[in-house]
Length: 315
Image 1: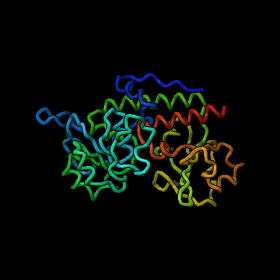
Image 2 (image 1 turned 90 degrees about the vertical axis):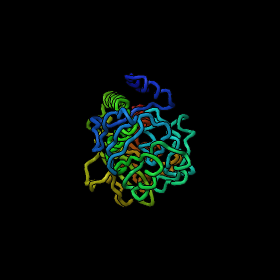
Image 3 (image 1 turned 30 degrees about the vertical axis):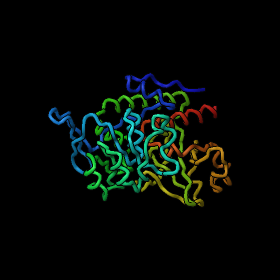
Image 4 (image 1 turned 60 degrees about the vertical axis):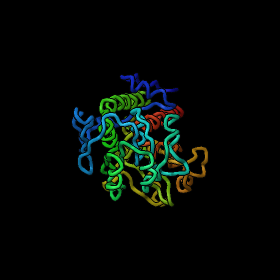
């Protein structure tokens, strides 16, 4: 069974639905971050955006955006502004496939931790979006190329970062519409599968450890948006906590999701989990290309579709 998607309330969102995967985003009650913007400035054709590095005048009609963070890539595509360049997590893999054909032609400008100034400059952008926590040392060089807006950190609530991107693009209304559609989809899943009272835990195996994602992470917040509860623990003021394989039973929940690069390869599930199969009856392997890197509107709806698929299959 497939849940129907909610009708969207604008031509922008209807256009977004033409992508291979339904767009939309945000967590219930998405709130604005500290960054704010003023209205259009008539004499300059720009608007003032407050961000992690101060205030920047951004053109009202940007055409050539370069993004340095996954949430910025996802959000610009969701709002119909296809970047000319993007930093990616893996240059060999390139732009994530879940973004669809609309994003397939985006040029890569290095990796998220190490973007290339030369490649960015060659694209002649009219707006650059980056992150203070990752790209602070590059700000002066970037702002000499084009108006540059920095979000504070990639670990902020992802919906706050989406809101900042929308303000930089001058399209807060479009973001609000996508948010409402995302909330509607969450509510549909919660009601259809009666998820209230059920727990869920997202686990990412890496480097011999298990990373558990909390309620403020992209994966965790989306699970909670769909009605699940992330098991309580000390999240150490972070979006995630690492545990050793010996502590694997701390990952137990009614629904356990383990990320992998290939969902058909059972060997990618850590031995510590496979050897305790009886303790993980609700185990599912999910694609990390959108559960981990799909932060934003497109990724949010793609993850919700995956939750729907999993729950429909368990009925």
